[in-house]
Image 1 (cartoon, rainbow, N blue to C red):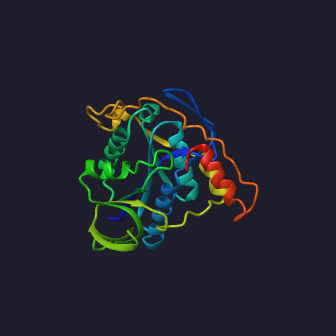
Image 2: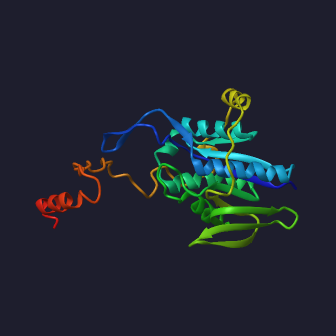
Image 3: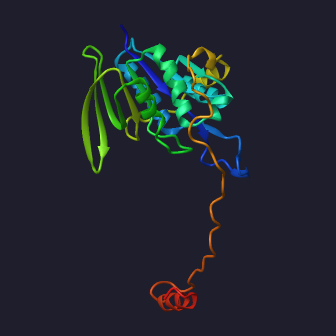
Length: 260
């Protein structure tokens, strides 16, 4: 049986996109979205595995609406042939537990030997979906991996993860879920021809009704209460003279402000 690898990907706002608060429950985000950086590392890791194990089957999954399709097109442009969109915009309104349940439901039927995901998404930084999916599936997982070697004949994997200034080397049997940290792989920039092909490709969609979610609902357990902007930056006073001539002015200013 060929090695089966599934990669979980998410589309997130570009860090340079303008984010505004429309209301307490709605954000206005400039339409600039990218595949999450750590998910791209997971994508590249799967591609590296396929280079070493040519008959490996690699599939990218993303849960959600239109933006999920964009993330999958990125995976196709980087080299994936099999991608699947799970659900619709209703998934985007749920919490991470609901998203994890949707992904886990599809993974149950795919029965992959290895599941890869970014260690965290670049928008919420929760680092929760990977471990949640592993828990739902009853699968061992290793987070924030910086190295990964898969031995298909023995159905095992050796993982390195950086922790407190040292690297821990772990070994696990498959199936296994691993979340990718910086250093696990270096995402490449896809060639234009693959980008164009991915833009024209039809992305398979599996409706929630076909995933066997049972009583899992998008409402989830975590509810967003409100959005609030960060506090405005206080006025900055620059000392005119260079150091050390500005020390006396700095002390005088701090005393005037009541700090000293």
